[in-house]
Length: 299
Image (cartoon, rainbow, N blue to C red; front, side):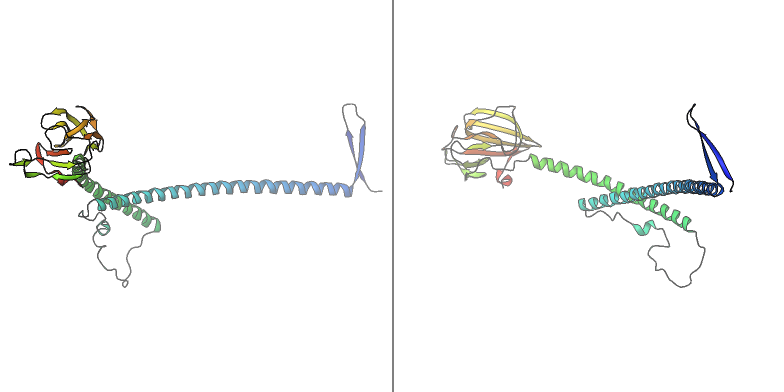
């Protein structure tokens, strides 16, 4: 009879003992199963640690790649911004010298010469050192371009200030018709309809529909608004930078002295007040106190 191993189990504090007998074959199977389970668990733990290590390495590699991509992106953004600035400078003033001098940035002895492919030799440099030199060369090129741009920007700032000043002056000039109609009397010498003698007419007489709105030829401040014996209802607007306009013989005035008006804003209506032969607008333009031909400012 085969040897059997006896195992005694007790369930609970007062439970009955239970006896199990296992033969040699069963014991060997149990030991083998436990060994296989232990081996499988050990292999699982080993693979798990290896995978964790690989995941950490992969995460570190991804971080390095992200840092390198960020560095490349920043460098690319710098050059893009610089190229945009260069294009803007070229558009503002075509006479500016070329802002990009790549050949000069590369140094003497390299630019402007043909490289021969025969007779190769000399000292060689490791790839890492060459990469460092390339990075330094890119930095030097960027710094040189930045200096050129900053110098030219200062020149363009002066030009832009002058152009802005001229733009403001032009915007202050009267540039629209105060009323649409037929010019009955031009600027200059004419025969007076009252004295039949030659006189100098300081503006334009524009025949318009009675009651038609008369508008400001440009924005400004009303410096005169009242009734005068010759002009009748008259309005004078100061547009700044030496420009002013006068609107006379108005049937009515819609603004008072001190009012700020915009271009195209109503000042009154066409009428026949003052010394006149019929309904019309007498329109004058003054530059630095001198009457000039208003036709020069009408489109």
